[in-house]
Length: 399
Ligand SMILES: C=CC1=C(C)c2cc3[nH]c(cc4nc(cc5[nH]c(cc1n2)c(C)c5CCC(=O)O)C(CCC(=O)O)=C4C)c(C)c3C=C
Ligand SMILES: [Fe+2]
Image 1 (cartoon, rainbow, N blue to C red):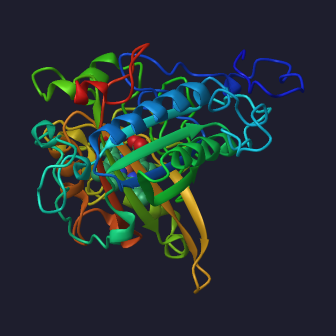
Image 2 (cartoon, rainbow, N blue to C red):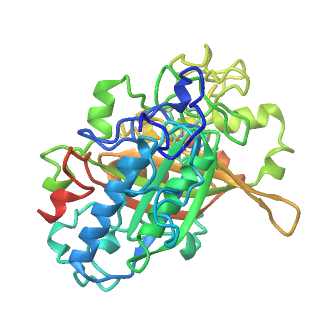
């Protein structure tokens, strides 16, 4: 179709709403990494239930074909949602009929468990292709990880400006995987907490602060190249042009935070709540001056503030491309919101980047935010480079 679900009979929306448009699926890099962050996320981690190499390859090919179709606003399969045999289940589940592609991107990552099992035994003949950096993340002080919210042999990130579109994408991919992979955990997110383009307004996280101000932006070509993509000299070959994805499900103790004074909240972050400007002075995008002192002679940006401890100057220059989303999973039995940040970061080297920064932040004597947050889920995935015209996700891995 022309970017709209084929079987739809109603006219497409009148004006070209930029949020409704399709994003190209093919490219040197996967879409959904430096793509300006969409408003909604649906993320899923899966475990492979097959041990057969050919069936894994077939799955990746079918997933790629479906992702190609859905990202361009088309139904899955040859006959889609309503044009097939009335006696068979439709190829597409149908809830995206009549909706525009809404900036849908679908990004895949491979976990360590796809290459070796828990005992280090090879899977799918891929043990020789396991990147050294695809090791389990180390434990961090204060982690309270729930194993059911960690790991996964594969991960798929669907981002779109319409949650129905993101859910439709994941649902159809999970359905295609029947008998070969099962869902380990999934997460819905809203209100992107990181802008990844300087054309975007910085959104706010559930603590009410602008989040993503000092993020790597797609326009910063050198930073993107230095900090996001795996280079030839980094290896392995199949991952060149790809990126490592770190996910952390972080619960936020909203009720405790909401009893903190404005001054206390701002000191914890190191930025002003209204403007997002650093406490060392200036507007949102003013450079952070870690040496600046307040009238009281104390550092304007507190020693234990989040932005100081996450800053490249105290982390051997490390930067991340953050792409996280807020979540609210209802309320817990105590009447508190089960809310937080589904932290997503892309990087060239997880050890020198995420692990370095998180070590700087973690622990009750470090980042002041730790009084209000707790990491409950974790994942590390190697995202292959983009797909060419006739290619499929991970094709270089099986070549
Ligand atoms: C290990 C990496 C990081 C985790 C985990 C993390 C969690 C987290 N962050 C916020 C809120 C904000 N973070 C901000 C900046 C910021 N955060 C990280 C890294 C992690 N954050 C970095 C590298 C930076 C940039 C530091 C810099 O160079 O200045 C900000 C300020 C605005 C911005 O620049 O984005 C906020 C606000 C929360 C609430 C949170 C966990 C729930
Ligand atoms: Fe942060």
